Every structure is written in structure tokens, then in C-alpha cells.
Amino acid sequence: MERHWIAGKLTASTGNNVVPVRNPATEAVIAHIPAGTPEDVADAVASAHRARTAWRGLGPAGRRPLLLQAAARIEHEAERLADILTAENGKPLPQARAEVLGAASWLREFAELAVHFRAGSQGAPADELVFQRWEPRGTAACIVPWNFPLQVAMETLAPNLAVGNTVVIKPSEKTPLSLLYMVSHAFDHLPAGVVNVLLGDGPHAGEALVQHEGIDVVMFVGSVRTGRHIGQICGHRTTKAILELGGKDAFIVDEGVNVAAAARLVADSCFANTGQICTSTERVFVHRSVLDAFVSELTAATAALKVGDGREDGVDLGPLVDDIQLATVEAHVADARAQGAVVVAGGERLPRPGYFYPPTIMVLPDQGASLLMRRETFGPVAPLVVFDTFDEAIALANDSEYGLAAIVYSNDANHVLSAVEGLRAGMIKVNTRRGKAPGATSEPFAASGLGYGYGQEVLAELSRQKSVQWHRMPLA
Ligand code: NAD
Figure 1 (spheres, protein in one colour):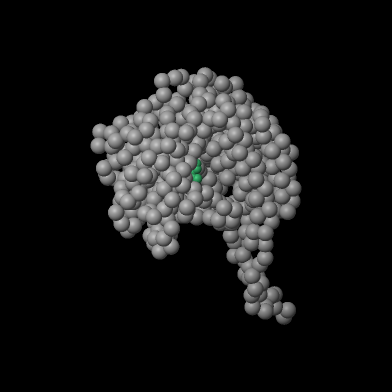
Figure 2: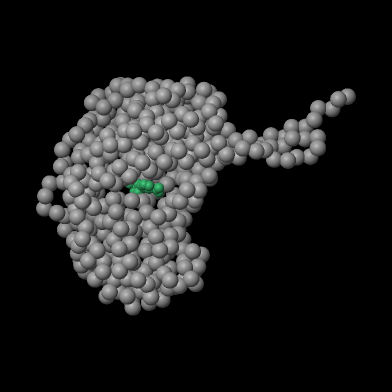
């Protein structure tokens, strides 16, 4: 039985309920975690509170070497961490290694950034000093999903720690092992209680954590459904919440482009991490003049992808994370088929143990109302819809409940400018699927979230500003 990480040590749960953790490639149970009780939550929050004064007192320059040391230790443990990640999440080992190194580099970035964050104070009249004082908010609750168990966890941990908040972090019950290992092996030199890992499921451990009166800010990364629920709780309690939620990203393939290159980028953007990325492409709009060539290039690019256990060499797509995710993908594909979509590749789960679904291409008569075009699928499916004018493509992309990111693939500068201006998405990517350059930031549109999750702005979100106006004392 796994244990929480509280006050700098592994700590048994006060309860007996357990949650199994499975390897999605074999369906075998590889560990059990406690479900998490309100008493466990109270312990973790109390531990984070005890650590606040010392952690805040170090200041950003004092925290920097400790966080850089943690980053170095993550790199030192990279092989072990990648192994655990692949076992619990299914992703191919090389991608797991890249995620571990990405998490370490994110930590370095924020350790440095916080030192320079709002370091100066502002001018004022001669007899007054007026300035803004930025303070850590206190104790953050970080609740994170399973698709990048270390990278997304680090996107919440690094900025919180760098600005001086102490943290209780709850990993997804599907992939708790890599985060527990990373924190207990790479952060154990931090003062006890600065980082606490609370194991457990959402409705019990997660909700009790969000409800706890000792939490000053909630940083949640996960689905729209859970995010809205957590947003309601935080609204009721007037607790600051940053919500980074799901998406249904559009990819516009314009006329006059290199069709083979566009197809390779679409395959990468739809199928990387088996389609389980918040900014995966989930809707592809293709100009009529390139449709036929595009379909044949995408089919060729897809046929070259290898599906398998993440531990095998040369695997591009691991399994989906569990049977629930598999059932969602199957339901979305079936619904689109029933509404006239034609399957060009894939379209059926693979007949083997494990939650394997092949990369799938479908051509739809229009955007329509199918689940595949309206709800986040989070699987390796590329649904294609044809358009005739660029304005129509933008309107199709914007006809969605979500607004996380979008990709436009075009040689036409005016089309690109129209997309940058017209697309209702926080992250606009032009001829690339990369979107989180260091220093860049964005706020999602619509149901995809609230607040800034990265860049300088996340440091502001996680701090509290006081204005101070200090007048000269009259001498007589
Ligand atoms: P989820 O909402 O089911 O769970 C996310 C986390 O919330 C888990 O730790 C879960 O235990 C917890 N949780 C569930 N119910 C809760 C409750 N009532 N109270 C408190 N906590 C609760 O999401 P998921 O399936 O783990 O992750 C996939 C989703 O995450 C997708 O929608 C994806 O788009 C999104 N995501 C978004 C980003 C982003 O940056 N916007 C990044 C990665 C993933």
C-alpha cells in the first residue's frame, strides 16, 4: 500500500479504503493507494501551514538554489521516473524520459523567474512612498490529471514553490506513483511540509482538499466537468481558483500548402500521447482544393505509426489510460459513424489485452452535432471536415464550447492574421503544434479555463498584492 508524503515523510492514511493503480498496457494492478480521508487532508494542510513562515522567509533568492537542486535530482532519477511513468500511464519510454526532463526544466525556469518577478517598487510623491507589495498567497491545493503526471504536476508545483507558497498536491488516482517518487526523492531536502502529496480519488480526497478552509488558492488542471464543480466550490468560499481545463482544438489546413508536411503535423498533433493532450488536435478543417491529397498523405503518415506497449522499442502510441477512456473514444467514433462519418483508417479497438486504440481518421459530411465534434474525445482520432473559404474555416473552429488552443497551417499572411485575430482560443499556433514557449502565456476562452496557468502571469496569480502608501511623519 502506497503512503501519502506529508511533513517530509511517507505517512499512512487514517482510512482503509483503497484505489488500485493499473498498467494500461497489461491491465495488471501494479499498486494500491489510499482513497484519502478528511483527516489525511487536514494533516497535509496543517503540515503545509507549519512550513509557510520558513519557506516564505527564504525569499525567491533563497528558494532558488533549493529548487535548482531538486531539478538536478529529478534529472538524476530520470530513468527510474520514466519507468514508473510508462508503467502507470502507458506512454512510450522515450516520451516518458522527455517528460521527466521537461518537468526538471520547468522547475529551473520558475526558480529563476521568481527572483526577477516584480522585484522593484514604484515611484511616488516626495513625502510619500507608494508601492505594491507582492506576497505568497499561503498554501496552494494543486489537483492534477493523469496525461502528463510529472509535467503538469510541475506546472503547478514550480510556480507555487518559486513564489513562496507551500503546497498540498493531489495526483490523479490513475497515475500517482511517479509524482510520489519524484517528490519523495527530489524534494526531500526542502523544509518538511513545503510539498505534501495527498493520495486519493477526486470525490473524497480531492474535494475535501478544495473545501478545506486552510487552502488559499486552488490550481486545478483537469476536465471541464470537474473544473466547473471546483470553480463553484471556490466561488462559494471566495477562494482564488486557477482552472486549466479541456479543449477541442481545431487545426485549419489552408489551400496552397505543402500537403505532405501538413499531414505529418496533423498526425503528430492528433496522435501524440495517444491523443491524450489537452491541446491535441480534435477537429481538422481542410480546404476543398487539397482534401484528396491530404487524406492520402495523412493515411500514409498514420500507417507508419506503431502502436504497442510503451516499453517496446519504436512504439509511437501507447494504450489509452484506462477502460473509461477507451469507452469514451469508442462511443464518440460510433456516434460520428451513425451521423454519416466515413472511417478511412482505424476505427476499432485492437483485439489484445490493454486499452489499445489505433490512430483513426474519419471524414465527416459537416461539423454537425456528433459527440466526436462537440465533446473532448481525448483519444487518437482525426476527424476531417472540408471548407471552401478561410472565413468559413474560422467560423467552424469557433463553433465550439471550448477555446484552449488552435493551429493554423497556411502560407497566406492575411489568412494567418485573420486567424490570430478571429480565433477564440488562448493559444494560437501557426505551422507548428508547439505553444508553450518560455515566457509565453495565455488565458483560455470559454469552457477551457480561467486564469493564467504559466508564464510570468502565473506568478502574479499565485501571489497576493497589497498596496502600501506610506506618508512622512510630520516633525511637529
Ligand atoms: P478529471 O477532471 O477527471 O480529474 C482531474 C483531477 O481532479 C484528478 O486528480 C481527480 O482525482 C480530481 N478530481 C476529480 N473529481 C474531483 C472533485 N470532485 N473534487 C476535487 N478533485 C477532483 O480529469 P482527468 O481525466 O484526470 O484529466 C483529463 C482532463 O485534463 C482533460 O479534459 C484534459 O484536457 C485536461 N487537461 C488540461 C490541461 C490544461 O493545461 N488545460 C492539461 C492537461 C490535461
